Image 1 (cartoon, rainbow, N blue to C red):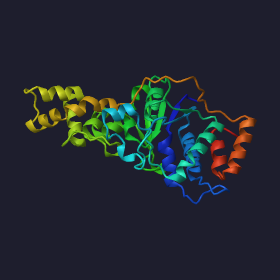
Image 2: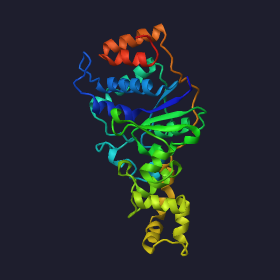
Image 3: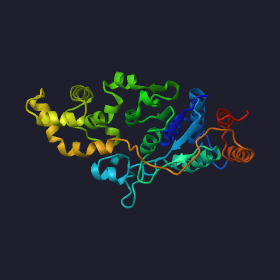
Image 4: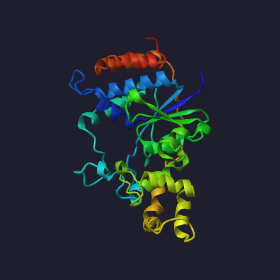
Length: 309
């Protein structure tokens, strides 16, 4: 089997599982278990359909890093729990999901799926760093379009995009990104900075939407080229566009650092190989499945990971 690394944007997937699986699913003690069961079924589906040989659950050790917030204070600000006034930012997460996150970490550990995070960085940065120079084809599984910047046909990096649901997964390649937005994947971060993204609290440049951002990048290649063109009276930019870009100089000075995925994090060694569980792990998983009422999700994920059904 050809080696292939699959990187999970784990929070993106367990939020999807939580909202996609009925919250009536509970353990015997009343603990909701829908996100756990849903995530395991998502993993089963992905591993079965795309046949990775390695699997990593990438984690938000810091979902809103201070260094990004310092550059753009509105970054993800709308997702912060409003009642919190001191201490680190806490993402607004439904209580029935909060109680399941430790269980998700526990079951991933039992299944031998490494959880990889990095201090002061988001899962996006972990994914970017693991995908860069992986040396094998990579599938990034996410509902976050920011990660489109990682798509790279030459190095076998694809994005399996979950935004339309697990029954309508989209596999994005260079051509897919160009077809969707009119920019190359390597231009996507500049495109996002120009356009802005309300879901991340990025204001963008006033008066520049997707079509205009794509047109500017087609004409001037990247953000540096666009800013240089705005500063050069001889270029074919309208006075209005020139003013919009110039007026946004302070934002454009910092936006690329916020939007671009970090690609040079280093991690302790870990084994991401997908392999059948040993007897001790099978016993532990069986106890976990019984205690937490995993139902059919348990045999499905075992089978997907190469265990006898």
